[in-house]
Amino acid sequence: MKIITHISRILVGTLFIFSGFIKLNDPLGFSYKLQEFFTPDVLNLPFLEPYALLIAVFVVVFEVVLGVFLLIGYKPKFTVWSLLIMIVFFTFLTFYAWYFDKVKDCGCFGDFLKLKPVESFIKDVILLVFILILFFGMKHIKPLFGKLPTTVLALLGFILSLWFAYHVLMHLPLIDFRAYKVGNNIKEGMITPENAPKPIQEFYWKFKINGKEEIITTDGSYPEVDGEYISYENKIIDEGYQPPIQDFSIESDDEDLTDYFLSEDKLIMVVSYSLEHIDRTYLNELKKLTDEALKKGYTVIGVTASGADAKRNIKDTYHLDFDFYLCDEKALKTVVRSNPGILKLNKGTVIQKLHYNDMDDLEL
Image (cartoon, rainbow, N blue to C red; front, side, top):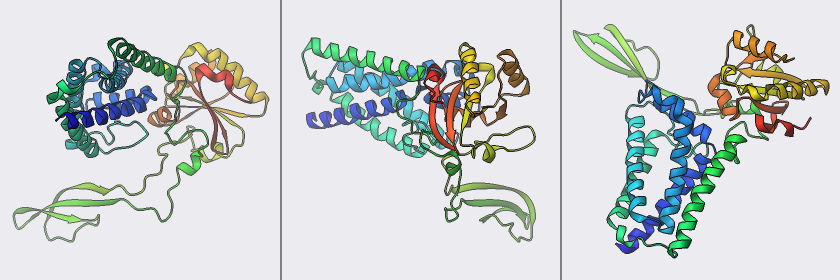
């Protein structure tokens, strides 16, 4: 039991630190995933949506800290009980997401590794087994060092986790795992290769045949059945190839200008998923920056999911000399974890990406 407990201790501690660090690198992204869970279609907890970021930071910091506590043997009873409660909660969430097919990605490893709900559920069940081993073998979990060094290490783990979360929120994720990272080409990320696997679906057609309801299964074509059609359902068996970038566009009221702007060799793109919630503190500085870019021959545009009134209000209030175009809100939240955020592109390739706190670092 002692050896199994030590193996479980290393595995659980390491995995919690790794999983927590991945989400700690991008707490804003994890908060978006929590908001998805809080919607009426999933857990129906909309009153928690305004606190999603606060909850996200608490959860990921606690996850990393518990991993550190377990590895160094700090307060074993508190640590193991906390791990058990957390994994039971996570297992419930992943089971709910899988069974009811409400969330396609549970966000366990952020954008680093996409797991399907069923994969996340299996992972959590395995973790639960290891944590139960720790629970019943708690007496074998001893501190690696003396009382003072162990306490200092535990405190350092907590402080560094909080500092790291604050740092990436005030700037951008230290490691960018998304398709819009510096060096990637947005146009290429939207392309589906000709030989890419196609989606596979099954269609279930309900007919009344000879007075009885029957289900006919096809791959999409309408079945030739001598009966009365009632309804149909379809199920995706295999999603096929999914391009890394989806739902990104740059649209005016009249046309799609995505290809046009992504062909520009000197483009500054100001990203704001919501102009109603934009941080206005830096908009005067943004005005100076974009004016300078225009003088140096750059094309400057804004992209937002907000409506015409919000666009007009921001442009008139801060005398911005560029226009805002329309893009999907979820896509813009993925492009840059900042509102506003600034991207410099060359023919669709991301050359520089900045948080509004770092806009002075833009190289024109």
